Amino acid sequence: MPAPTSKHSPAASASSEQRILDLRSELAEHDEDLAAAWAANRDLMAQLHR
Image 1 (tube, rainbow, N blue to C red):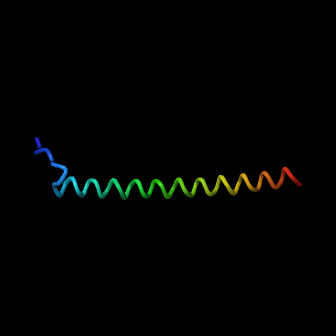
Image 2: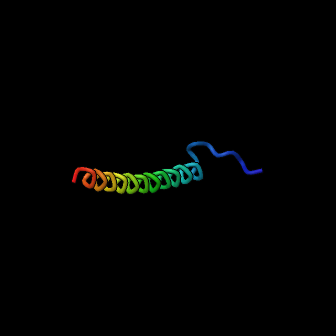
């Protein structure tokens, strides 16, 4: 069984850094989705008010 990693070990640090990168990527994807939804909403509202 592998030795437990402390939160200050290089493995834990690398894992934390990877988690941060993963979350930033996920956030960027959600930002893109939100921007697309806003654009679609604007278009639909414009069509509704023509």
